[in-house]
Length: 270
Length: 367
Ligand SMILES: Nc1ncnc2c1ncn2[C@@H]1O[C@H](COP(=O)(O)OP(=O)(O)OP(=O)(O)O)[C@@H](O)[C@H]1O
Ligand SMILES: [Mg+2]
Image (cartoon, rainbow over the protein chains, first blue to last red):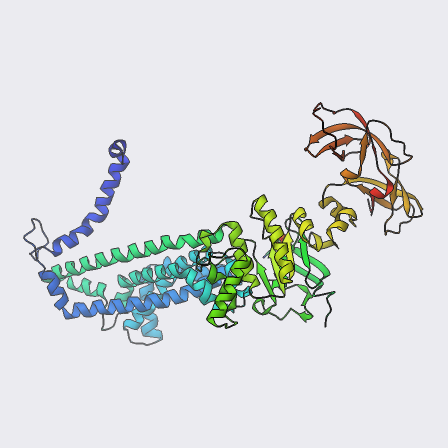
């Protein structure tokens, strides 16, 4: 960055913006090591106490475990549905393709509180099923599929259709072509979609709040803890862990996405 | 046995995309072991016809036979054809070996035999030692060879090639033309080759089908396409041609006298055409078959006076564009520069005499 750029009002704006965006988040790890249950300056002293409490808190660990399990299953199902939908949309001339795609994407724009109420009504009044992790999972799949599809459609559109035709031409069936050509080429997109869906499910609050039974997920658990001031530092410790973990996931998915650009370019080159 | 006369048989095949007739009622045969080219301008339906042979497009009407077998119910992965795609379609996630061995999975060869086959293929395309390279580490010409090897290791009865040399530079293209022809003669497989480059088609093919707007205009070898085109479109598409419109006046033992308006009467061999008097015809003649001189030649017919409108020096020959009173288009004449000369003064505007013997011109029905 040159000297001229430092005096630039836009540069100052960018710095202020970044502090505004990330400053509050960075307070989390800071206070999670602070030897006081009150979140206030000045800092008292350094401690791992809150991390110890976090690990020993059974219901917190249960909620964490639920969220991780839920996230993994939701990510797998959404990505699985997403890839077949994406293949259908990008490779075949389906009648009514536009409206179908629109309907799949609809949950992106419907407020989740509306979705939550609607799903609750359906689950309890129409289907009469018990609320559980399964109902939360179903709700999460509904909102994750559009994201999975967006990621995978752009990935499938990025590589040459001729590659799949070449595979047919070389004697492979539709199914083996999918596994030998489509899947490996879409793999970076598939991994990105898995990570994205996991993250969405992991911190989703509204749907989980409406659809939760006896077992809660982590966001709901954290929300319930906010009433007890002495539990707050434990939540901060947990938040710090999640922050670091999210950062790793985002970095990983971005790295995969960039790596994935390469074969696309080659495929398009003549 | 279906006989070598028609190894591939295309019977009344049409392909419509909505209102577009990409291929329009085409019928012809390709012989076993032939190097057969589909030649035509962009959008004339070459790729569509090739993709119907490969099985990627289903004919709207008609039927295709390969080696006596009807293809309509045979999916692409069960056809005795393999294709070299225009952009090669090399699998980017596999190395060169992986690409070449891709189509051999079903053959279930033992590992050693598979390796030997791939090595042999690498040898054939002159890329031994390139087996572990990835597609993005190959040049255009090398990718083209890999695509060729990948198709040929499957020993197809027919190899389909869609403008495989289109992306290569001129020198490499000429090299690959020779090599491709050589490989075809070695393996003895029937090649169906799509190109829009007439020179490429003329130098490589046993026979060529000239296509236009979904129709096949003429199927012949290179010499006959050039020297005996059967319609004006083919004559115009292959090389350069001068056309003179007229009507038949008389026909006398194989020659017709054509009343060609401003050019007077032109005598031309009738060829196979049976033409009655007053039939509208076109007389066509190649630039290199017209003699050009300063003086009126001693010849009773096919003599035209004109003025040089433009000239182009090409080294081995010069092109003159001669304006003839009453003709809208200038007559193109090629002149072989046989004598060495450093005289580069312009001949523009000078009066010249054009002439040709009756059998150098071609008679085409219709004006
Ligand atoms: N899938 C398709 N849908 C609609 N129209 C098509 C389709 N494929 C080809 N066409 C049309 O059919 C016609 C013939 O196309 P084709 O690709 O066979 O031409 P081509 O001779 O191979 O041309 P080029 O030399 O440019 O490759 C064109 O008018 C094209 O627009
Ligand atoms: Mg084409």
